[in-house]
Image 1 (cartoon, rainbow, N blue to C red):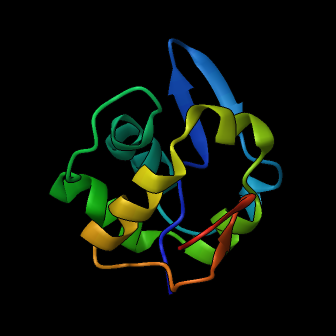
Image 2 (cartoon, helix red, strand yellow):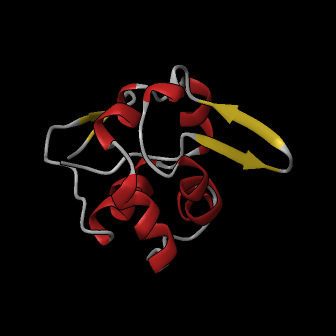
Length: 104
């Protein structure tokens, strides 16, 4: 299994949604509020909080990965997403596709 990413990101009041995110189960709001800071481009890589990891563990990761939009990928650092997944005990398998990125 794996980790997904932020399905809806809120940066400066701007909503960025993944196409079809409503089909994914889990604590999407928690993923947004607790994890967005850990995957933004232009910020240092950091280990996630326990609250973020709880949200990550609740989410249908493959569903989220399949629905990542190009807009989300422009503001999310996929290496940080992969780090987040691993840090939360939900590492993506090597070769897994998440959005347009592939796990090394």
